[in-house]
Image (cartoon, rainbow, N blue to C red; front, top):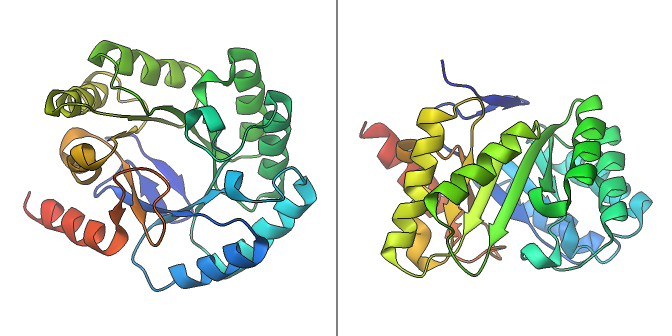
Length: 254
């Protein structure tokens, strides 16, 4: 039996890849408006990209925002993400505040998964993993390379390191410069599925060149894909309606 991670009624890592829509806005009002608009789409999870939020350095404001979004989304799982500037996010904060923010949000019970970045530093990562898991929240551990695609063995090594650090779902996103780079990412994904299946993994090759990786997860072993409702939060994200249709075509052709 394949390993999967269950959040609410969604099993990440089982069957068709799950669709996650990034929720991006600067103000509380915009976040709420955008969250309401999502209810017309077919998808599985929402990624709350809190690094876009103007008041992100006020934990109480963040908690109030999440509570309102949870009321709108009802039973839809929420992935809480502060993406650092160096990994493609909107803002830089101290590692200490990053740790505090993620652990404090896990205590609210209002989110289902929290993204933590692999290269934050092992000591802080270990503290976050412990603190978040104590509150029964799942962890997506991530790494993003917006400049290149590392060698296959390096991609596998990073994903395995995330497993060793006790995350629930390792995630890596890389930038291809050639078609061969896209194949490198897909080959690494397949190797994880075959040789290191203790967790689901999320992988993607970014930009227009890498779009195939966003729709072929069921074939190669990526458990979740990100689709854009309005503003894409990363290069190459496919509009969510097209993503839903394509994933189902591939699933039904097996």
